[in-house]
Image (cartoon, rainbow, N blue to C red; front, top):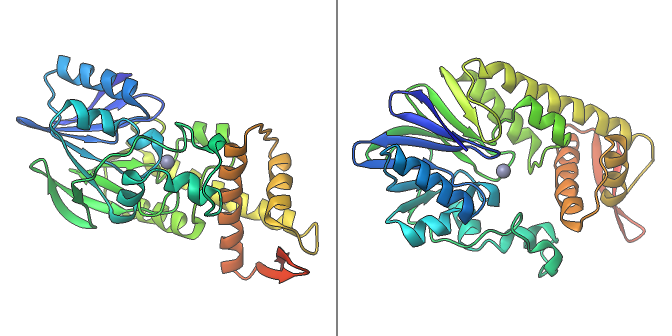
Length: 297
Ligand SMILES: [Zn+2]
């Protein structure tokens, strides 16, 4: 973990999942917390050594790698925690993630792990879109859904703490099919990022970049490529189930998985791409012979 100075009072802790930080005299705003208490402890130590206080935590979205450390902060520091309404619900009841991945059924223990279910933590304040002051720091909050349901991001003085609204290209190459819940919204969020008069951005996974627009464009292209490939895959059969399509797409992308949790995450992403194709009238969901099927159009 490395503390990187962006400009003035703005920093980020660079690691597998970035943690943003903005100082305001005796107050300080942490943006996300990393995955667990070890990460939170490490971040707290590093910030303390640099004389950077933490009084508030802004959580961008309810994925454990972003909020899993918040419970430790709550326990050991006097902090106020901020999140958007739907992300808040999951942060406070983290079992909801394995529940939704397991199609609403009370989930099996296999998927109730630290990657899918972080420690619960109470959120003190709900954030909304628009200008808002947190820890005495005035920022513009944008909701950039697509990778998660709301995903508010914090912008200040031209710097965007963008969380997972876009990914570093190296991250996309590594994961091939990023976790997504809505592709149309993700693309609209990416367009919104392109329209900002920002001087730089730091994604949840990757490095701060001044020319982040190039990376955002690469994300748009990545989604389009996956949509094209998904459409091609759909046309290989007259109809198929979402599970069969997930398997076919994982094979096509040379992804080999051994865990149920991984299958469910990819299945969700595949369904998000198919939903986008359905929205473009290139695919249709049908119920036929007691099966839920996807039909190419
Ligand atoms: Zn995420």
